[in-house]
Image 1 (cartoon, one colour):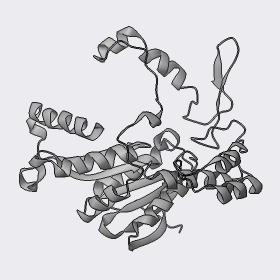
Image 2 (cartoon, rainbow, N blue to C red):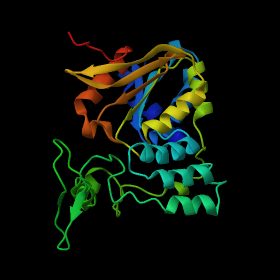
Image 3 (cartoon, rainbow, N blue to C red):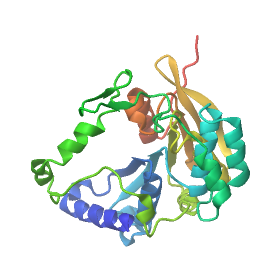
Amino acid sequence: MAAQDALVFLVNWMERFPEYKGRAFYIAGESYAGHYVPQLATTILTHSNNKNSSGATINLKGILVGNPWLDDVNKNRGQYEYMWNHGVMSDEVWADISGHCSFDDSADGDRCYAAITKFRSGGIDEYNIYAPICITDRNGTYYSSSQLPGYDPCSDVPTLAYLNLPAVQRALHARVTKWIDCTIFEDFKDSPDTMLPTLKWLIDRRLPIWLFSGDFDSVIPLTSTRYTVRDLNLSITEPRRPWTAGHEVGGYVQQYAGGFTFASVRGAGHTVPSFQPERALILLQSFLKGILPPYKKKA
């Protein structure tokens, strides 16, 4: 439904601004956009106006998704395994979880649930396990537990207040309502468990697809996306190698048949540009140019 609604918006927007028809068009997003972006790309490519590329209203050239939610089982397995690999979970708890969980929410029973409930992270930010957290005092004041240059873990507090101002909502032409930043995904009624068939369909049509993962994220970690990329069963065309930002390794990248690309961003959490803006920009520029991010070897 979201893809169909977005397509209606895009087609009408192109009619309102026809000078943009035929221009190269890219879609990017992060997190649950692992569903939204491939589904929208598929809807665009199957739309009647795009059957002949010469007359395409929306000239889709590629998609880019960060820390993407692609497959429920791989997401769940990778999430717990990442916690264990990074010292957040004990060997005993991981053995219990991996021994009793298939990581399929619809199939796992009481023994899996009991194993998972033994896990305690200690109150870290799961979106970046090495980032500071927001501390709220009883008097309502809030502050960061420590300093990370360029990042404010409390930014959602003033943002929430700002977006709930009636004047702001009216200026955005939104219904005046009590706005919250996230709802429960279980309410979704048409959300598939996996994007693997959709990704394969897009790869078969040779649409450039780039996925990237901040390697400090435990919510939809690098581990989860690795499992999903493995399940695509693609042949490797460019072996995994580092890429650089300035004089440092910015991450690692590997390319597969059909131009499918998977990159990591070193030192970034779930929302990569929040933690590593320069590295995010390099990755975005590389995607738009259709070339792998640079690797500058030490002299």
